[in-house]
Length: 254
Image (tube, rainbow, N blue to C red):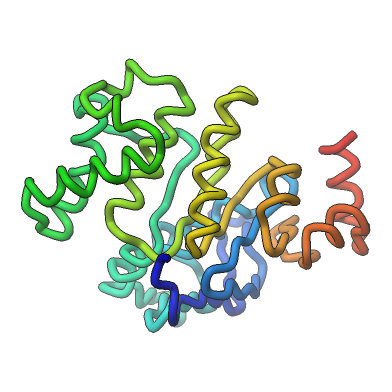
């Protein structure tokens, strides 16, 4: 099991602007240790921006993000991320929609690189860790392949293994199946379900409503920069209370 004690994620009144455009409008959210939360909602609603604020990739204009004992905060024009962002990123790995693998590295090297550089792991230890993770995501036989030789689903599973190589206690997943065909999506979603069973804290931006219903403990609907509804999947998907949620689900489910 993955160690998740003291891994609560708390977002308090976070506001984020890009120029004059308000992307997040005083967002409040709590993710409990070991919980799987699916962020759904219309494009442009702030989901990916919120995910990037959680691990310090995006600075925000006001509010606070707390991950375990680490705080990302903004006071006036000065942002206090500093070394806290580094610690938060070690607790929360991130997997992107576009894989972001190093094309000149083999699969094994992609997974080894961060532990060697950031954690100063020896090459021997990094190889052992990387091979174990590649076996876990079903790609042990592709260790010496290059990204160009992989399918989209395989690339995404390598990206997950690379994030896990830093031994995070949670994963942030940003629409990681949106570019994949249905069969390849299932390869990736099966890995996430395995991590959920292991107790990993997962926050996922997704348009895969079926997966969100099956795997999430809670669904949070983000629209126009605000949390408009949240609750158990069966309630939010089947019996949405808010008009904005109802409109979104009608459009996406048909």
